[in-house]
Amino acid sequence: MQFNSFSDFIAMGGYGFYVWLSFGTCALILLSILLDSKFSHQRTLNAVAKQLDREERIKKAKQESK
Image 1 (cartoon, helix red, strand yellow):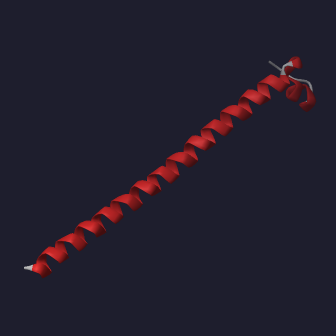
Image 2 (cartoon, rainbow, N blue to C red):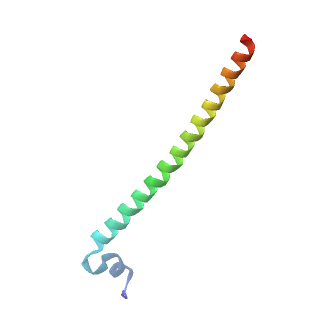
C-alpha cells in the first residue's frame, strides 16, 4: 500500500485509530512482559542469595554448637 502523505499514512484509509490502537496495545503488553520478566529475575536472584546466606548461617551455627 502506498500513501501520498504522512497524514494519509496515519489515517490508514480511515482505520488508523484501530490500527494504531492495536500497535500501541501490543507495544504496551510487550513492554509489561519485559519489565515483569526483569523484576521477576531480580526477585529470584535475591531469593537465591537470601537462601544461600541462611544456609551459611545454619552451617556456622551447627559448627559452633559442636
